[in-house]
Image 1 (cartoon, rainbow, N blue to C red):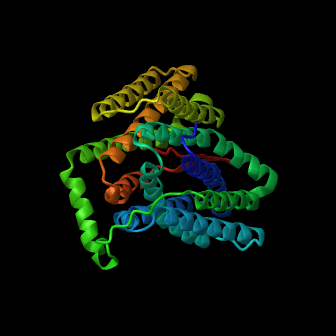
Image 2: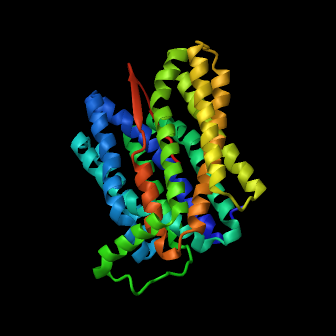
Image 3: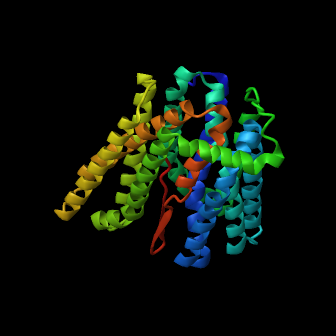
Length: 373
């Protein structure tokens, strides 16, 4: 199922860290709102969690192309693990404050700008070309499972071991991910012409390659459109769920069905083992998402408060996004030279770094919502 040992190690490491990261988002949101009771402070933490990745991302891809991707993954996972374990320790001592959380969030965000392009650029080095589609589908399976299981584990963790335990588990997840990555066996591609003193030249060369490659620009544009649409939907979903039921149950069901859609889409792709895909199919996927949003709006306009049709729509959205994300990665991987993958996937992460992360507070109830492409 997992193609080969090297990919299994990558998949397992990412699975563990993403499960931890998903419920960390919930734990962090609850902690910030409990300590500050201020939506402005939550906004500051969210900005700290995204803005550094956006800025650093313009330079991180070039560095990834110049260095050993496996080594970058191990080091960044270890740093993130140590930082969050430190947060857990400070919470245990009751010395944790908002300022420290903001600083740690900024550092982790900047580190993510190096990790994400590294792992996506490394996959074609450990998987045969005819297995890339399956590899990407399995990655989307992680997104689906983590989006369903992560928040549940977060809520359980807070109930059983409090904020300290929630932070602790997430920190351990990053360390475990690094341990998995240590055992990956992959040849290190080293381009001797990419010397450190030519960093700016290498960066210019990478961006010039992307600009000249029309196919890459088309795919990046589609990613931007889909991400904006999904982000906007994620932003309004909690408010919409509140009109359906007046409590958090509807939101949990909607988010759960969306995650189930990601899982179903990834599972079907993994079974089908489809290897080829064109930009046209990505355009069609974008159109399907548009239809889903339109149906959502029509049902809402008609004041239909039965949740079942909305659940079916978000399920279809999850399936569609899982397919689209699987194949945009495949197209980028197959049409980008090995020495340029870091900068291409860094551009992808720049687009995705401005993800919508919203926490809705109603009395003592907080729900965190996050969608990852």
